[in-house]
Image (cartoon, rainbow, N blue to C red):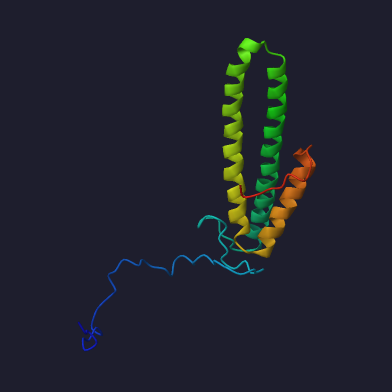
Length: 158
């Protein structure tokens, strides 16, 4: 059916519930690398860069979050070492139950690490150079502060 002859010019779209968009600036979502922080939202609509101070606080938060990821990874490694030592000193009859308990705790650590790494990936996916540098600095500081393991185990999304 051909509707090209119909006139839609008189239709009023004012009551369609778009809200007053003038009160709240839109988040600036880039899909290409940029240094621009104007209306940059970081992961959440409420985490918005509105000026120099919010940028500086946000960069410090990103550094702290990324360093925290290294702390979780190191805590996981230390738990695995302690748990292996505990199992080694147990009588054979108790090993199976302790291994099950350890597997649950290791799975919990693993789940936290996966969630955390995906969150850091979302930070990086702002495609903003300042945020990307803050992630790198946070990984550097986190490794210096928390990691006793080899650097070959990389931070990955999964």
